[in-house]
Amino acid sequence: MFRTWWRDPVDYRGLVETFGSHGALGRFKFMLGAGGLVMLVIAVLASIAQGDVAGPVGEIQGIVEAVVAGAWTVRWWFLPWPRETESLVWIVLFDIDTTANNLLVHDRVVGVLGVFLLMAMGGYVTVFHGPRVLALHVGWTFLTSVMLAWLMYSGALADPGQTNAGHRPEDLALGLAVILVMLVVVGVILPFVQFCHWLLRMDALSDPLTVLLNRRGLDSYLASHIGHCQGRAVYVATLDLDRFKAVNDSFGHAFGDEVLIRTAQRIRAAVEPHTLVARTGGEEFVVVGRLREDAATVGERLREAIETMSELPVRITASVGVAVLDTSRRDTPYNETTYRRLLRGSDSAMYRAKRRGGNAVAIAGQDEPPPNRLKRAPASAPEIHTAPPRDDSGLRSGSIAPPA
Image (cartoon, rainbow, N blue to C red; front, top):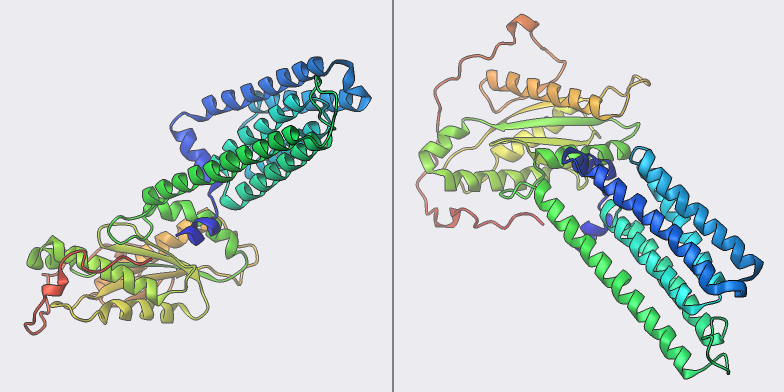
């Protein structure tokens, strides 16, 4: 679970769109801009607090700090929400500027206040960026606190009231206390909050029965998957279990749930590890993956994975439709619009497989009838193929653990 969290590519754009759909982006922008205004005030107060001790270098750094804080405020209050790359640039700029200010000040109190600003930036990173970006920010903050503690111990950030500056036990104790506070707040609490945020988001994007992605989860991960498949052949397959309503009516919904769980396991076992697998409807599944063989072979493997489910009192089959991205055209865009077109194509092919009687594979763009003949044929009477009687006490719903 923790490896999955660490490797998870956070859908930055999806998060921003989610907050925007609930009308929260305007308030977030105001609060972030107000944070920059507070930074500006802190820079002015720190300059006043240090008086003439700061020197020309300190004065220049104070001006830079104020300029960065003012630019941050203007950016958040008057411009649209930044893209992911710009957001990362702002984080790097903020971290470097804040650390430089902490190491150039001549007052230990002002230096410690600067480290707390790094903690505040950590909250933004926790929500909008992934664990790897947070790890870099935590490491930078911890390194800054260590250097600040050393400056305290060496006497460079001495207490104005002390006479013997440098290497005092009191300074060492204070420096270690600053390091431990940063370790607890930035190194423990922020990753814990981000992990909980990720876990709740994964729960919202997953189907609770099969532990596959749901339709929202498929949409969320589609953008990152497109980036990994750039320039390569990809496919989208839609599977729908045949006559599943008759299975529920004959054996009950608990058994139907068991069939869906086993179907999800068989599909996941039949595809590569990084393939997207989602349950998008009652008995409908969608697979998005990299094409390493012909589409018919992929479809047949998925069809056979369902047909060969053993230890069931009923034969389960599926209709499979497969659509493939045409990589022979160099101008083919790898974007969500293209993938949604493939989704529609695989769904249409799946219904053609249904019209053939089910337990079949159809490839989008191959042997398709004219548009006026695409009306769905009347559904035939459900047919249940019952296996010989046996002890099915092990088929209780939930008796199979969902895949890890």
